[in-house]
Length: 360
Image 1 (spheres, rainbow, N blue to C red):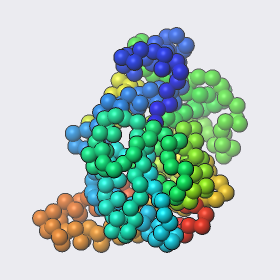
Image 2: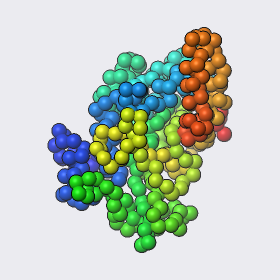
Image 3: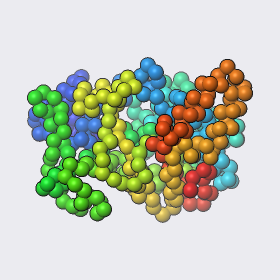
């Protein structure tokens, strides 16, 4: 989802993100980190398929079909224990190539669940990839276009990490908004306006000079909207992303290109910009009457509780020549030193729906 400003939209569309940002800074002064990240990622995702070995990074659904299958079984289990309600809708935010959706839908079908497929995606390039794998889908630019009746079964895997963040930096004078300036022809962070303590969570106000606090108003707004939709319509949402359980100081903004770390201030729009999800802030935004929050739990723990070890063994028996590949994928998804600990799993569940599997 793009968070582009009116000023940005007024600039020529043929200009690169770097050119647009440079003109904005020349005209109005430094821009916020959030605006810089929104401009860069809007262009990045609209103009390429960044997934897989030939792209910039690999996500869990691309590592193994087991991930999407267990997501589908988690949703199907909730649906069955809720009495098999009619008119259910599978919703995925930022569905990548459609790999997760295809695997999850296949698993759900075996349980008797055949929901409509609603994909929230703005990239024309990725919509084409999704159409090849999930041709029955309907596409939406935002949550606004989703069906207003019937339970929503929502999945967001590595979606919220790419949404814009604000960065607040502590100096000897207090907390400042961190901005992005153009210094000697290069983008670079710089301290901006002084902020009052009301912008900073009380436990973090005494952080030492140099500390950086990140916040994602865009993520919290979507969390709140999802919670409201689930409270009104029923259903559940499964959020999987890398991040931290508690709000804390520390810079996590990073860039990735060709499966390696890159400079986030260089070539905006030509590399993936992400930041760790603050699951405490996310859960607080989603929590409201009619919604229960479960988790977060570590991805490795959740996948093991969902039966990934048994699924891996079954796949290896069916295809012995792929046994080593399957074991490597299972390990990559679950081991603490791989994705198992850094990635977290959080659920929102509507009132009247049962407690979800594998989450506290």
